[in-house]
Image (cartoon, rainbow, N blue to C red; front, side):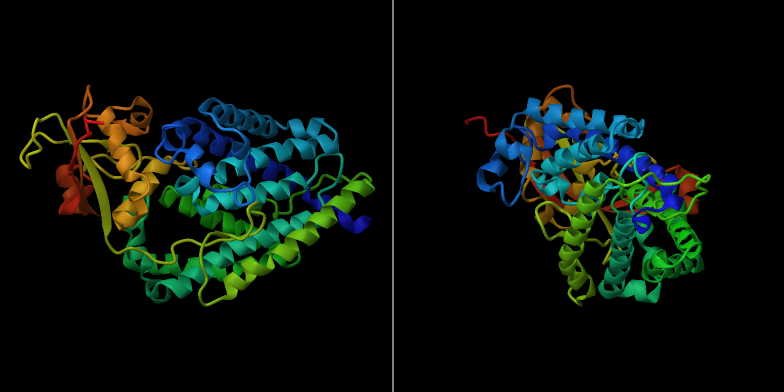
Length: 468
C-alpha cells in the first residue's frame, strides 16, 4: 500500500528513536541507582509488601512473579544495556521482527518497574514514557518506511500531552487566566535549576508573555500538528523551542526531553530521495490492528480531557497504553521545604547541636545554588517537595526514611548529598520552613540565593525503639 509509509519521515523516525532510547537509558539508570533504598527488600516502600496485596491483573509486572533486589538490579541494568544498544542503532542492523522485539524489551522492563513503583513512580512522565515506548515498537526500522498510522498516533499523543496540560491550567488556577502564574512558578516549582532564580527575577511583563505563550503553544499549536507540511513542522518546532525554555528554567526529569522526541517525529526533514521498500503484509496487519486498539482505548482519556472535572496524569489501563496528561493545574504562591536534622546529643533540646541533612536537588543550604539534574530524576527530592505541600504526601514512607537515618543505613544515605555524621544520630527531627529567593541586593550582599523562615514542627525529635 503506497499510503502506508511516508518517505519524508525517515530522518524524523531516526531522530525520534535515538532520542527515545536516550530517555529510556536515563530512566533505567535512575531505577538502577535508586531502587534499593526506595523499593528494595528493606526499602522505604518494599516491592514484596506491595505485590503481596496487589494482584497481577491490576499491576502486571515481572516482579509479581519473583522479586529479589538482585533480580530487580539485573532487570534495571539490562534495560540500560538494551537502551544503549538502541541508542547506538542496533535495531537498524537486524530484521524488522527482531527490531520490534528489541524495542519491546525496554517497554516490558519499564512497565514492570512502574507497576510496582508505587509513590516513587506516580509521575506523569512514567506513563508518557510507556505510551511512547509502546508506539516505538511498531515504528519499524530500515527494512520498511515509517508507517503513516504510527506517525499519526505519535502526533495524537503529543496533542494530548500539550492540550491536556493547557486545559488543566485554564480550569485549575485563576492565575493562569490572569497571566500571573509565572510570578510565582519559578520560585515554587518542585526542583529549581541553576537559572530558575534569574527566570523568577525577569520583569513581570515578561512573565505575562510567558504565560500567554504557554496558552498558545498548548491550546492552539497542537492542532496544527495535523495540518499539511510545512505547517506541521512549524508547529512541532515551536513546541521544541518551548520545551527548551522549560529545560532551562527548571528540573522536570525527562518530561521535556520526551516531548521534544515526540515533536522530532513530526518535523519533515530532507529525505535525500530515499524510497520506502515493500512493506510485509504481516507488518501492515499488526500495525493497523494495534492502531485500532489504541484509538478505541482513547475514548476515556478524551472524555477526561474534555470534562470540567479533568484529572491530570491518569492511566486508564494497567499497561499504560493510552493515558491523560497535564501539569501545574495549580501553582503555589509560597515555597515550603521540610528540613531534616539530626543530633548526637543525649537529650533533644531545642538549643542542642542539630545538624542538617543535605539533599542533592531540593533547596536546603541557603547559599547552595540549585544544580541541573534533569533528565535524571531525583525521586526522593521530588517527594520531599510534595511533603512540604502536605504531610499526607509523606505518610506512606517518611517514618521509614527517618528510621533509616537513625540506623545510618548506607543505601539510604547514598540518596543524600551530605550526611553530617560519621555515626548514626541519636535523634532525628524535621521542621517546615518557608523559602523565598533573595532579591538582587540580598544576592550581592550575601551571595545566597535563598532566605528562609521557620514555620512549624513537621516531625518531633524521634529516636529508635531500642527495645525491639
